[in-house]
Length: 220
Image 1 (tube, rainbow, N blue to C red):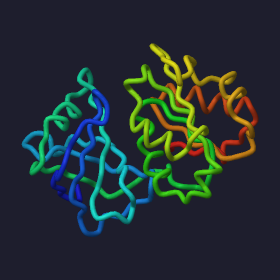
Image 2 (image 1 turned 120 degrees about the horizontal axis):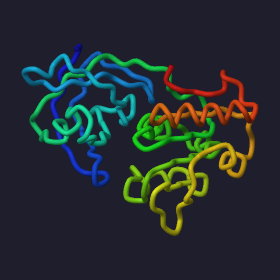
Image 3 (image 1 turned 90 degrees about the vertical axis):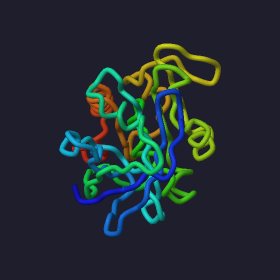
């Protein structure tokens, strides 16, 4: 790993998502949407690297990570959630193909919103005005940075919940019929991020609707 960062601040964003603000090491550059490998700076964990996306601005003085806990997976996110200011993490140089390629339709599932947070925060107001978000979660309580996303995109921020819903949210999965209802122009660019099955289903639906592969931005 190339860099050591110190946690400056941490706090909950949702019931199982925490924001971590860390120092920013000299020499770490990234484009909004790119990821880095992160490892715990602890014995037995330094080689256990996992990808996370900085959600901070690329020219900011600190790094920000927005990390969901997965207690039933490998334990890394649970251990990260237990960290406090003063603790350190190991961070690699940036990588990834999800970057700001101009306005488009952003389609996210769960924690797949994190690269889009970075891109939307970086975009000009003009480009955001020409962009839209379709964001799928299990319940309204799972929506990451909901107020900010609604503020940035207004009515172009559409939230859907697949297990439990409420007024102001759709109760649908993002499939071909949902895309046909809520996308005005399939000639634009589409950004897709989320669990692998979500990405596969959405990209297949977009392809079936005539969107060419080179207009779909995913992690490749």
